[in-house]
Each structure stands twice: as C-alpha cells, then as structure tokens.
Length: 387
Image (cartoon, rainbow, N blue to C red; front, side, top):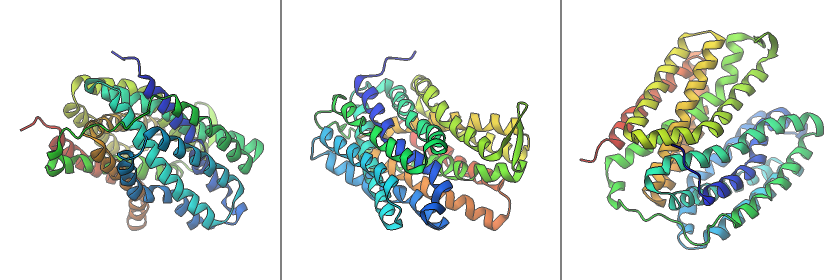
C-alpha cells in the first residue's frame, strides 16, 4: 500500500526537478545546435560527459561538507548556482567557459542529490524507504521529462538561447522549495553498520551501482538511436503514422522518465514488501533476459515492449539500491552514487567502443546482459541474509 510522501520528500524532489531543466535541455538541444555556436563534435561529447566525471570527486566532497555546514544553506547555494549555470549555457559559446560551467554543474548536482536523498532517508521509516525513494525519484524526474520534451518544443519556437535562459529563470523557483523542505540541520544518517565498508557486501553494492549506471544511462540510452537507425532506417510506420527515427528515439527515451515518474513509488513499495534480496534478484534477471531477447528480435513492437520492461527493472533497481545505500549512511551513499556515475560515464565508451570492434550495434544488448549478470551475482552477495 502506498503511503503519503513526507513534506521533505515532496519539497526536495520538486526543487531537484526544477534544477534539472537546463541540464536536460542541454542534452537534447546541444547536439542539434553545436555547429551554430562553433563547437566540434568531440567538444559536444566532452561537455555532455564532463559533469559525470567531476562527480567522482565532488560526491565525496558533498558528503564531507554536509557533516560540517547547515544542509539547507548548502542546498540553496547549489540550486542558485545551478540556475545561474543554465543562464551561462544560454549566453556563452566558448568551449572553455561551457566546460567550466558543466564541471560546476557536476559539483552542484553532487550536493543537490546527496542532501536530498539523505534528507528523504532521515525523514522516513526504514521499512518504507524504498517507496519514499521512489516518490523522490518519480517527482524529481519530471524535470528530465520537461527539460527534454518542453525544451525541444521551445527550441523550435524561440531558439536555443532563449529556451535555456527561460529554464534558468524557472530553475530559481527551486530555492523556495528547498527553504520550505524542513532541512534545517544536518540530516546524515548515523552509519549504523561501520563494518559494512569492510565486507564483501559493501563491494557488491558498489558493483550493483556501477552495473545499473553503465547499462541504463550509459549503454542503452546513448546508443538506442543508432540501433534504431541501423534496424529500421530513417523512418518507421508507427500505428499508422510515418515518423522519423529521431522522433521514435525521443519517444522511447522520454518513456523512461514518464515510467519513472508514474511507477517509481509503486516499484519501491513492492520491493519494500518482498525485500531487497528477492526484489533486486528478480529485476536483474528479468532485465538480463529482456536484453538477450532484444538482441535476437528485430520487431519494432517487440523492441518497444522490451525497452519498457527494461526501463521498469532499472527504475525498481535504482529506487531500491538508493534506499539501501542511504539507509547505511552518508559515506556509503556517496560511494554508491560515485559507482553509478562511473558506470554512466563509462557506458557510452564501452558501447561505442564495442561497435568499433564488432561492427554491429546489437552487440550492446549482449554487453548489457553481461553487466546485468554481474549485477545479479553482486546483488546475491550484497543482500542475502546476514551470516
């Protein structure tokens, strides 16, 4: 049964959603506009990945500073700087300036995510944490949906700079939500299991995070458009309408965030009920089977259904593992978040590198299945009954 989310969960998730508008719009629009502002393709790739690489350091900086300074102040400062950076994307075209802005956004996101997730954990009973993390993820990812979809619509109507400037202004609305979230003091959860970091379960948790980040945000979402193009050409017949492959790719990727918004609380509640040991195993196994089938099937309907099932498995895993990491304390969560970020940063490199070697984009699904197999065994090690 779904419970009502806490005030802290709703307000921090809403602030997070507003902060994501400019970042997500940049992912959708910069690949379409980079030539107009004089960027090279390789520079686009660097800009869109720089924020992930820098988080490998700033996640731990956030964890350390949260112990020393008021979390509400740090959250407000991070949200304010994040909104200013959206304005920087709008009005600067220098690669160096944009690179600094992307690195600073990675810093901001480390603080926004860490403070928000630990705030949700500190305001939630342990037995309902997966569900509340699902609410947080679902609400916050509305920012992903609006940034991608609304950003594309506005881009066609008012242009690149005006769209990002508008999103930057709207992002300042995140500040009052942060102020009213109830985060007034340090919200770290005491590390109840200090010995957890020295056990194989801790290492296994990090492997799970790496696998989730590398397969979903990394492998699949970075190569899906090319897979569709290689399978179906530049246009497809979609329920009686001829649509471009870019439109189909956008619909499938947008579907991931819509499912997250609608389904994350329910997925979290189910795993709270059946337990993370069984729930994580089921999600990894189902995701693995789906990817093997996607490698074999050329049907557009089958691919669409398979991607939806895969996205649901990823949503459930992310909610459950984020809850588990936050339950174990700020240090564990910071390292888990870095493992996810490392996977998300390496995923595109692994996927496109494999295509260069093998010559078939479908091999991405084999790689994804292999990584999910590692995640499955890691989850068994991490979450089996205490010895």
